[in-house]
Amino acid sequence: MSIGKVTIYEVAQHAGVAISTVSRVLNNSPEVSHATRQKVVASIEVLGFRPHRMAKMLAQQNSQTISVATPSFTALFYNEMLKGVKDTIRENGFDLLLTDLSSQNPHETLTRFFQRGSVDALLLALPGLDEKLLYEVRLLNAPVVLIGTRSDEFDSFYWDDAAGAEMAVQHLVEQGHTRIGMLAPHEWSEDAAPRADGYRRALLNAGLPFDPLLIQEGITIKHAGHSEEAGYEAIQALIKNAPDVTAIFAASDVLAIGALAALREMGKQVPEDMAVMGYDDLKISRFLGLSSINQKMFQVGLEAATQVIRRINDPKLPSIQRKIEPELQIRMTTRRK
View: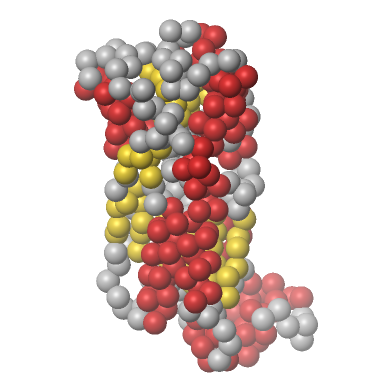
């Protein structure tokens, strides 16, 4: 049976019950016996059925809900995106449902969310979607926009992290630095490898040696290593192991902000003693004078929410794949006087 084509009629036939019984099970009605409910649920799982929530809501003439699923609602990176989403959804009269994927197994959390069949439309900001999760996304039978993962099948907004990192390190090279360290997230972070690749590529292109010992992680693991605490820890370890480093590329602004605090405590001047380059260009970074790579997160949130609303109104629109081009923002933390 083809993915996304299973109907409530086929579920009823497979379970040997009336369509109205399947409907009661989907709506958690207490009027269904436990045995019948289990039989219907088993048929739903075997057939891979997902209720078409959009059609149901339109038939009932209720307001529709756009779900936003992210690994964190407290990380500043996702906060920037959510501001753009919120503004767009509110202006268009939709309700907003936030789904927290910050557990130790975000893929499992997302799968459970999908299986509840409670999605009218979805903005999914989870990099590194595997085939199993993409299968679940197909079963939703609802408009979906991916953020952080490129897909020819779905609308998607994504970045070239390697190119952005290369741009950041090239700027440090142009400022005259030859010993450049990197503050990295934990290796299981989806952006860890491409940003390290861009760092390495920029050094080699400039004729500088690549030393893997100059890539330093923090100890704190929250947000996959993207936190102020991790940056604070990482810069201390880096300076201890490589005191001749004169510039650092931090793989996120929050790592850079933590590093700035540690450098200040160590009595080091920025950028005179140590140049600091971030990544993300958060709003707070502009007020701190932190050089960074702008990923345009607010704009991505706004455009992704606009696209999912377009798809609600016209499901047959061709999918779009939008690569967000990074932009270098030079400020006081890297500009030599």
